[in-house]
Amino acid sequence: MTNLASITPARVVAQYDAQGWHRTGSRTDWVSARWLADLAANCGAEVEISTFEVTRLVHRRSVLRVGDRLVPGVPLHDAPLPPARGIAGRLGPIGSGAEIIVVEATPGIMPDDPLDRARRDPETQAVIAIMRGASDGLALRNAHCLHPWGNPVLQVGSQHASALLAAVEARQPARLETDARWVEAKAANVIAHLDREQDAEAPAVVLLTPRSGWWHCAAERGGGIACWLGVLNDLADNPTLPPVRFLATSGHELACAGLRTYLGENPSMGTVWVHLGANLGAAGGRLGVIASDRSLAERATSILKEKGGFTTSEFRSLERPAGEAIELARAGLPFVSLVATNRRFHLRSDRFPDNVDTDRLVGLVESVILLVRSLAVTT
View 1 (tube, one colour):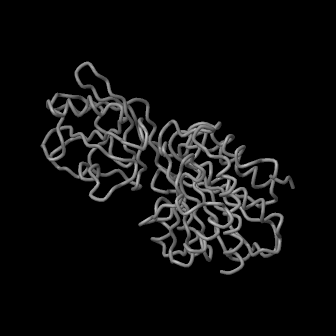
View 2: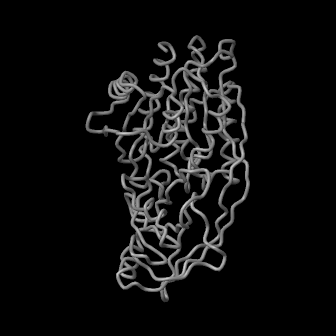
View 3: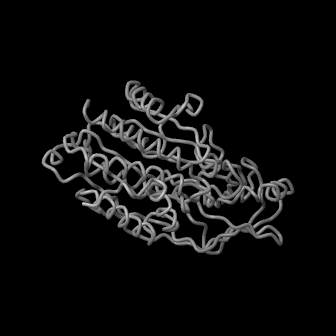
């Protein structure tokens, strides 16, 4: 067995970032799955790369033509594609009856979400979504459904907002063109447990981290992977602890397809789940804790403050679960979820080292180790 002590959290995130864009079912996604499986095996874990089928969008080029201006973008991945001939018409705001309506949106779905309302507008043929993240650029939204619905949507970067809103005001004609196609593909979850007798039993804890996403997603996903490996390495050196199952899922940006598949095959696996959500270790990030019950949230928060060095001002309140934690809540499973903010969330600029606070990440790894140990012996 090769101990992972020499592979620091920073090195884990650096290696993950260097692999490329972590789109579900892509070549990089498979390279990353094997990389993570190898690291887990080096801890002495029994590792399975469990495949599942997914419909993914292969996108080559999309533009909105407005006069002489070409505005590039990316289709929303749970919206239908426009016809091959494209869609032409006047630009207008939601409710205007224009053939192509323009809305401003965020990567996360908001209450009374304007993009969702635009997708349901029966009087329009297409939607242009100006995606406003915490920083300028194209902050993509995840697919939240497994099948396309509503109007076709092109997501464009916030740097085009002024020109597009002026074009909407003038009701200028435009044309949406997309070169993309749906393909059937395979993706993989990485599942690990330590090879010892009690690990054949139902696990006391399932430690979950998503491992796919938009672009390089270094801070968004890399921090969770570093914590996941840190706990695995720690438990390898503590063989008397109750069993823990380690699950790293693909399909995060495609309606959490990997976790949905796993829960369909293992509906009651785990006494309690620890969800390593988005942006753990992101530079300048504020950490949030949400759980299926108050006692789990209080235990996690206490450990993060006492052992991880997090102050009250560094926490933020969470009103509802996010990402894979939504699926855990729907399944009625007990869980605790850690999610932080990220100034470059879903942006191409979410890279290592600029957007990763490596010192804070070390504290997070140590805190998650203590949290999993605590839950494993008391649940």
